[in-house]
Image (cartoon, rainbow over all chains, first blue to last red; front, side):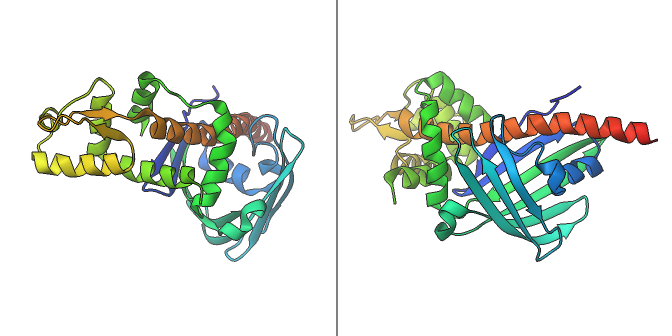
Length: 159
Length: 115
């Protein structure tokens, strides 16, 4: 069975975002898939996106770099540094987007827990700045804003 | 600084509190006075008024002019913007994680074959 997990995305405070997802696989496999470049390349980015470069120096103080080819033909580079690694438990790393490097660096914490052979991934992301969040927002505005109270009620229910 | 980014920060800060979210959820069903809003909470009207001020400053509600009742009404636009932002973020990760689901199935099959 696939896709047992529903993605939860919750804002916390004015700059944090918490992402939660359950995977129907043991923790060591989820950990591997999220930390080995040849595996990360196979899933990172939604359909139409391709991770064309993936470098991971997986140790505290080591650096990582992703280059994503987007459906519009443009590339988006991301990079950062691993601050803390507790095998199978927790990763803390910094993250910045090449295009918005001037706006600073965000810090992400990833947590992995396993129960009955299923793994819960929790990612806590602190956006580096309002500008970066704004940049993400602008790309999202084309989806069209939800104007009805029904949608608002749904949003409030998930927050 | 674009007004949109500032607005988003204000929106998320205002939404960070469960009482304020409950107030907004109530207001999606229709306008209400402070007294009506305070009723379901174990909170004084002044405490509710404080939350309403935060929501008003964030542009999430507007207050009526009626001096006695000053009914509160939900303002759709900032919430819709916050929703659109979360939606983009959600689509990126949902798309990625669906591909990861497939990869994990493959990895488990490979692991099974090696045994």
